[in-house]
Length: 296
Image (cartoon, rainbow, N blue to C red; front, side, top):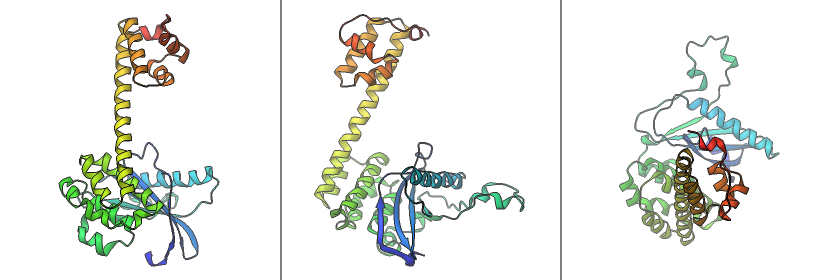
């Protein structure tokens, strides 16, 4: 099948079709290409949990529906989808088709099950050398597979990160390559505890633009983490203040949140106030606390 793909037409697509329900299971990368005169999409689904999940066929069904639904919304032609699931768990797993998830299914019912095939790749079956030199052709696939395969041996991954990224040195000079690299940077920063400096320096050895991208991405993730922590602490403090009837505490927390850079809209949302009330507090005016916030 791979021989029939016109690799000259292979194009990485922006965006993701993983919704909130699927986010804990997959990260996706979608390519469009020509296949024997037909345009189709190849969806690479990087499995997160690294453990067997009997719901996989149902998750893939939902994912493919999301992809086609997004095509409708964007007024794009719908294309056939070939899902490729990349599994890197330790236990052997043969998940089977959707129909296998139904026990004792009568033959007369089987035609009503929306069965489909998908490619299931178990990375534990391949060595690093296999992935680097023999199994995959595309640079992006080889790098992604190596990162996934070694994600649970982070000392090994940190040691060989430059070696793995070296595969894409030329690819990372292209805009498409940098987009792919950004996805890999996010994966490394979110899925590992490898020191940020090691990740940035390893990437900088291959591409200076990539190193800058890694630094920017790391800083953005750090700021988002601080913002979430601040919002959570503020919300907890406001709730405690309201429950104790602590008007002064509530006022203090609102002002502190503003000094930390939270917008009036965000403060209002967290505090269950309207924006006008937040503005009045910040202007040193007295407000009436809504009764529902004073109850336990």
